[in-house]
Image (cartoon, protein in one colour):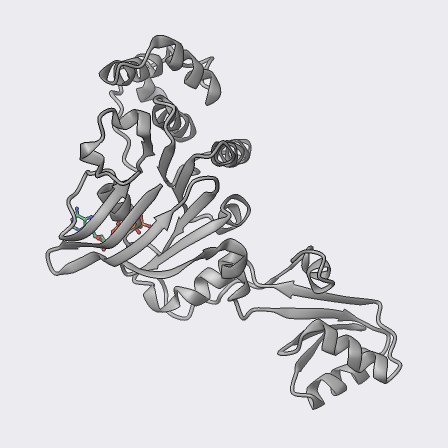
Length: 322
Ligand SMILES: Nc1ncnc2c1ncn2[C@@H]1O[C@H](COP(=O)(O)OP(=O)(O)OP(=O)(O)O)[C@@H](O)[C@H]1O
């Protein structure tokens, strides 16, 4: 597993990572989220011994990275800035890396196939597209068959098929019992990839919880109601302190009131309902809300994205999903 304890890193008068403590456990994908400049890459560099903390500690399986005997066999890393000898073929790049750690040719062939670079592995890595470069970086991370993966923005540059591929790969690696720690700015993608989240803002911990729980913290929840008597129901909701806005004839958007209460009000007055759908905030809306005070770069007053219907919400209400 990965442990950060009171991790602190300053660059001049800027504190990039500020007293950060968290643990990343094996068996699930853990997303590492935060606005630009929140300290994600710095944290990952500290974990990988590429920078020294001013205070605190970062350990992998209880040891500092620099004390690992064969680091590539323990930790596979993909960092944003990739170091690839552009004149070398992808295959030779991987082979050179493998040789530094006593990893055989067979494993190079395996990872080349695993990341789907079989057809281009003998080509110059310098001519690779961004997506191919990402696949090469992931191949390098997997060379030592490590039990821990630290991936900084692995989805960058991948096309939709590539995004699904990396998602499936990360989930499979986690299901095999590995520790998978991955940063990303793509919230929709993280929502379906990561089971657990560590969220930082201005170098500090904002949340360390399950993805479900983080989304639940979003206040952007609403109930979509369809009824032939929508206007009367809207009055009842408003009289009880809820907010109801008529979207179109027969369609209401209710907030500040849970779906069961809306149903009860309708039932008490004999109002027919054609639909009663709780929506939940998206990971994106929760992220925007909860990191709002930590955003350093961005336009003031940019709106948070709208809530999305939660397909599982009705089940959850019935207690089948919890
Ligand atoms: N080598 C460095 N020298 C000086 N300042 C640095 C250095 N590396 C990072 N910083 C600063 O530390 C802060 C955290 O940067 P970091 O790259 O870790 O954030 P991040 O969360 O990865 O951001 P992004 O999402 O934009 O990649 C930023 O303010 C950045 O400017």
